[in-house]
Image 1 (tube, helix red, strand yellow):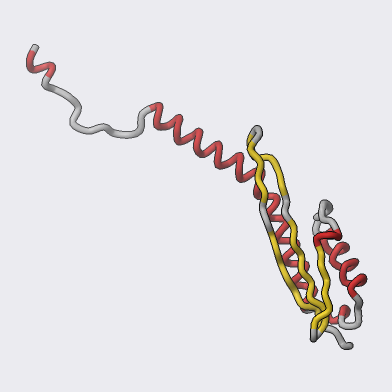
Image 2 (tube, one colour):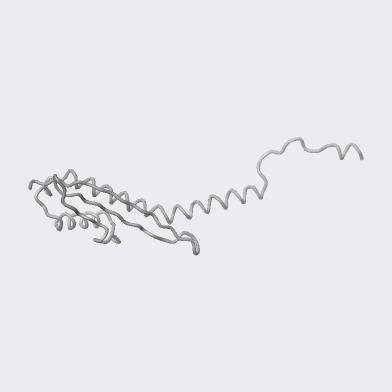
Length: 130
């Protein structure tokens, strides 16, 4: 009887069921967060590409601020960004053209009553002939 009690396992191999449940729950939580936040960053990538395209567009060299705003909104719609407001765009006259600033805060739900707010701010310079 004494010899049977003395034979304890020397090392554990693998993870226990509870460890697997904890790991899977953590991965599911991370996946749900990614599914809710990733579209916000994809939209921001489209906004950045539109602003980058403004800097190298020679057709905007004689445009005014209203025309620049209109071009930005059209290009965003082409990139499937429909929930973007004109109020997010600020256009100021600069030395060599116009300074375009896009600043916005998308908000959304994560899980239950947990929300997120992400702040983005991008700037571009549109060269002008005048």
